[in-house]
Amino acid sequence: MSQDVSAVRRSLAGVSTLVKQEKFLLAAQALRSGAQVLNTTSLLRAEVEEFTRLMEDGCIMLSRSHELRKLFPYDIDYISGEEVALLDVLAKLIETLTTETSKNLEEAAVQVAARREANLAKGRAELAKGNIEKARKILGSLLNEFPNDMPLVAKIGESFLEHGELEDAAAHLEQVADVAPSPLLLNQLGIILRRVKRFEASEDRFRQAIGMDAEDANLHFNMGRLYLDQKRWKDAKKSARSALAINADFVEAQKMERYAQKMLEQETAAR
Image (cartoon, rainbow, N blue to C red; front, top):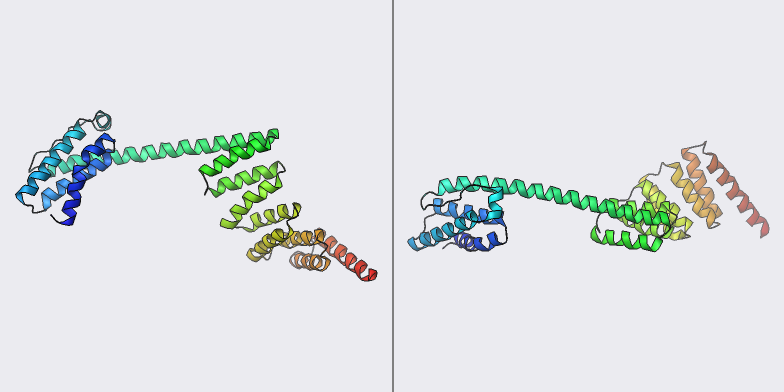
């Protein structure tokens, strides 16, 4: 036997097991391949006899399956030499099973999404009650189930932020920023990191945001706020001027520039 024919024979030999496992689509596809081989390939007499036996046994197994009958209540008969008729039946069976599989996958996806939202709501409810550790446990388990769901990670980060848990918020939002950065997210993250006094990380995020949108005056202003917290007066003044170069009417940036200048003058006078 050629390699392809041998592979089809092995698939046919496994049809019985596939039917017992209710893997009807794989069983039907194996039978279709067998019928195609018999219909188009020149085989030795012994090979034809073996294929015929395997095809007959496989069709009987499918026809006797009560579970399959619920989906496809038609006889699946095989008569040697009538492979074309069998291929027509198998095509309809495979179409039915493919549609059913798609339907089941859609239903499963809906159930998964519902469970995801329900557990997210549970975690948020615990946060609202002040049960932070319990919320972390619920939301942590949720992330273990959906580790690559960045929209979910972002929602969890926002939930912690809403309830004042800044370290937790930063940890989750940093994950999102590493995968899908945006000026808005990076600005928010920079502010949170500044508030928890992670100044170096905050500066990195503001620089990243400015690199993506250098014409946003608010980004330069927020960087200046970070420098004020660190008493880096020259840098604060520079950031304020950058903001004012974009928006000359930015009142808070004007105040920042004046304050930074005042502190610089005081430092100079104290020397």
